[in-house]
Amino acid sequence: MQKRLIGLFLCAIAVCGLASIASPALGKDPVKIIYDTDMGNDIDDVFALAMLNNLEKRGEIDFLAITLTKDNKYAAPYCQLIDAFYDNPNVPIGAVKDSGCETFDGKFLRQTLEAKDENGDLMFPFFDLANDKTQYYDSVELLRKTLASQEDGSVVIAQVGFSTNLARLLDTPGDDYSPLNGRELAAKKVKYLVAMAGNYVERQKEYNVIKDVPSAQKVFAEWPTPIFASGFEVGREIHMTGDMMKNDYEYVKYHPVKEAFKYYRGSLDAEQCTWDLTTILFAARQDRGYFDLSESGEITVDDEGFTTFEPKADGKAKYFKVSREQIVRVQEAFAWLCSEKL
Ligand SMILES: [Ca+2]
Image 1 (cartoon, rainbow, N blue to C red):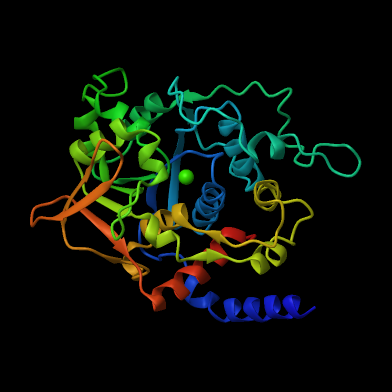
Image 2: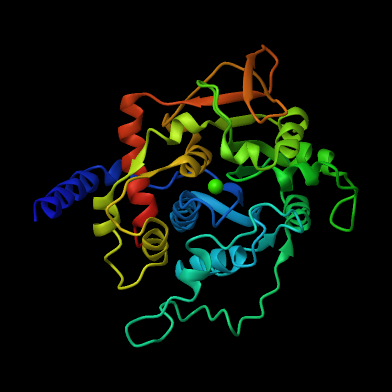
């Protein structure tokens, strides 16, 4: 009971903060975002996808595409399920081709897709894995198709998994979508890349980097637009709480984010770090001061996967910083943007 009361109290605080959080960026064009994710490994990719759907409903973003870097057949259908749940089923999805990276099913993709209710029926009946014949794009083709169709300098790519797709994109030749090669296409269409990758305060081999070191080396060395990097040390400090998981999804009997969290953690009584979510909040609301940025510099990735930042006046990269005060604001924004039903 006490926890429930604390949860209600936190909800009341969040409601008081709604006016400052909920209003769309009036007068601004929605931020165009491609979500490049290793959906199916850690659970923060799921919350980030929920955020993307809610931010699009608020008119703050234009959700252009999802491209996957986890090489597992359930990753794309799970993303499709989440988008369908949010009544946004037409976001194009690209699956990574033969990367061999993290091919295992994991703890929540297939499990959520096949989940049954107490009557033995599909918990999420708008997605029937056994009968669905959806064809997905190849990730790199979808990146080219999407970028070619957008205005110059308008697209933000949020990379929250491995660098496989973006490294491959850089090496593509011109095609029917665009005569430009991949590097030229990225330079022309991408406003900036925001990536959850690396660690910029501690010597650490971070997961997203070490799963495909050559691709991370290539992207950080050759990517032709500004790069903003959210290091492991940022999302580690900002948490989703068990109270939120238990209380904030109760507007519907079965919620595919909550169910996935239960499969992943085994319980709702768990805290979750918010690595991937930081990139989405930054992209959608870059001018709101949720994060600070380092000076300009260059990020390099060594052969073991360690990331190093070197200050340089004309460097194209900056990394995220977050203060204790900002953590409170970011956490509150995440609580709303991950769970609201508009
Ligand atoms: Ca991820």
